[in-house]
Image (cartoon, rainbow, N blue to C red; front, side, top):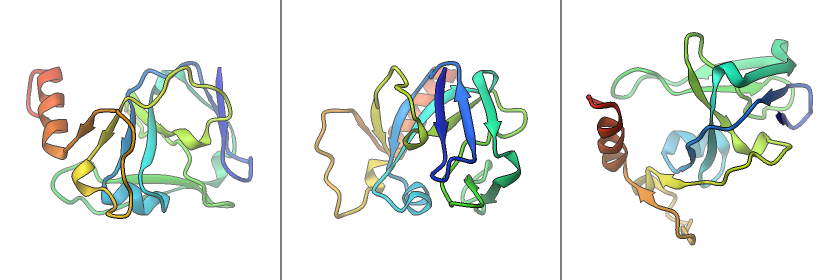
Length: 148
């Protein structure tokens, strides 16, 4: 099990395994939601997720839809404000803010996404692939065999 928690430790969770992707997202919404240059998001299957405590403190905010659904949804601890995982009902997969993990997930970031939106003050200094929005859409379309 891979355990994680919010800053105050009340919201606690575990995942049986990380399935990826492990993306570093530079989109404006992720930057504003995190207050950082990017969000490190680790993919997990909903069936592998276990909320151990703090459900009563999880709040969500859904930003308006910009182009098409789904909306940008963030969940956070009402006590400390940390982002927390909160899978959307009916989803099979979701992203966990990797900074919440207390244990080694067994994987590392595999790419930067939405790099055309990155903060002008941040310089990407690693060798990970850097994908634009257009490249992400093309990649997802080819993986699913249909429109992204």
